[in-house]
Image (cartoon, rainbow, N blue to C red):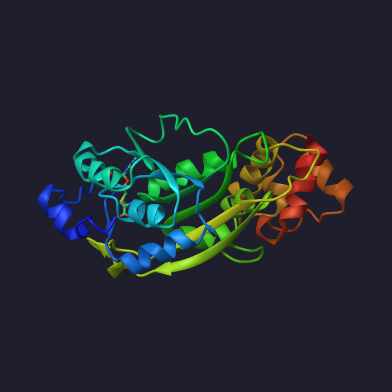
Length: 270
Ligand code: SAM
């Protein structure tokens, strides 16, 4: 590992100018990267799926923490730099070239997911990982960088302006916390917005409903978030009767409903 040259040198040697189209904002600060790699807890001997390793800064930190890493990277220009990391950590890193939205990782057994991704790709993968019908999922934890505002929506609590579909999806059968804020200046090049890392672990799934039904309920309720539930949910068959049977006042607005109340409505409709 000590044989590895500094990341800035690697970037220069391989001509890895950051591609805007691929959402490339790299992290070089080893201490920061080690702190990120520590968020999931001890990774010694654990399997990690990393999406978007780029030149491999976070990958190195995960390997330093003792993980066995499978990394999916779309930019072929990064592969020679990642091959150097692979050589420094024999048999600990497997790199798959391609689009993480389309590719299977092939990891057997439990694993942690860690990623610093472009925000559009990150949110799409995140909602996919949280939407599986089978629970608990194969992954043991998610440690993901988001735009700060998206991170705040994920961990938001009822009554706040940030509370919505994403918070319910992230919290009805998982614990989600904002683990670390990351200043824009930590990235090269710096993005326009601040970032934050969210850490998510699966919890027990409430019985009697499904991810799909809960999604239908929150889609209707938050589709018109300023309206009362009796208006926003009238297009969902059975929803108004479900509210009544549960004693939920239809004059309330979606953002006042706790996650357990959304789950109860979904269960009544299931
Ligand atoms: N992990 C590195 C770091 O922290 O410095 C790079 C982070 S950079 C924000 C995001 C990386 O994700 C880039 O290397 C980019 O090429 C890669 N990427 C973007 N879209 C991807 C996708 N759909 N599948 C796999 N990798 C992707």
